[in-house]
Length: 219
Image (cartoon, rainbow, N blue to C red; front, top):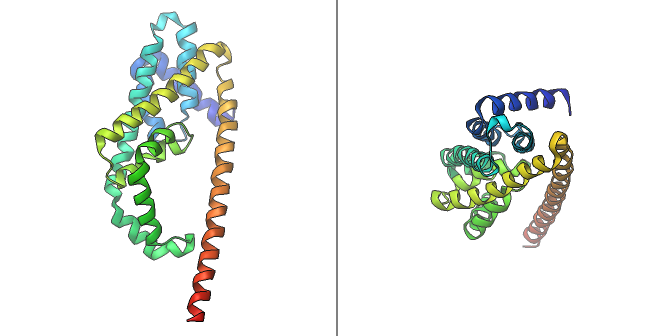
């Protein structure tokens, strides 16, 4: 791990050892609001502590519940950030600067329409993708997704994520930091996929704009 990540990991370990379940929930809440704090450190160490630090009195169900609770609370903070930002703020930004990103208000309309139809799946699966898992709460709030529905699918996705990471920590024991290497590869694959999608979107928009210019010239 890099020196900075090593310091963050040490800080996380100290909080969990000192506070137990509340420490896990607190750090997972912070991880959702501030994505640079990696859940890939929090939950695997909690799993390692469960298997190797019996004096802490942790249970597997307990650390999963604490991690999930912290994740959901952090997601709610970002959900209300989305509510506060409001659709009007985004539309104003798109009107003023959207051309630099090849975006228009029609794209906003399409995105909101897509979220209306598939919002539950987006929130659920988004919780399993690094980086996206935190940010997905913002558009959910902007779209005024019903809070109960948001909480249900956020809780389900977060529970799966925290369970997998905690169990990896139990299995790996003292080598729990190896999870970071796996997550690094997972994150790189995710970023490559996102980059491909962005490139395809740009190509599609440029072609659409050229077709529009051609049609206007013909008229």
